[in-house]
Length: 209
Image (cartoon, rainbow, N blue to C red; front, side):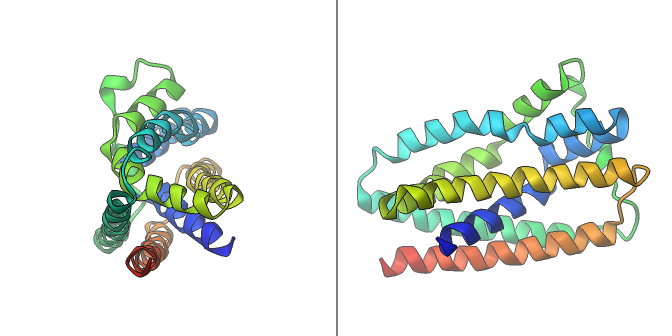
């Protein structure tokens, strides 16, 4: 249970705070339109990821156990790569106001806010890469141990992922649209380290088994 809880929370938190199209859209939407629209962007993964998860699980579940093990090792490397990318983002962030609000998906602005979030997340390759490699293999491994662990992983993953984006949106809306880059950098650093630890645990699990 604790492994599923830790894995879900660490990867979810890292995914939730990581700079990227959806986080940038949530920030820019909050800066432009306020709390409500920003929150609708933050919860978009709950809609778009359901399709990604079903398609990824359908593909991976057809593979033999050896292939799933290899894919799990690749997934651990992907998680580590995400962690390194987050740490690098934290390292190069300027000591000024959080400026990710400049990332605006102008081609999507005429669509409803929630549709913008769903589309930008669905078309982003990062969720696909994660769920085809790490996500699906982790979920299958926990399911084989017990369905409860699989559900705990999914629940904690999206609780942390969506919760992190919601917290960012609330912080921006409640603090006159300002967030300290230092605070955000510390969050990124902690998340990156957690992802690296999780990647090592996942790698050892697949290698030992």
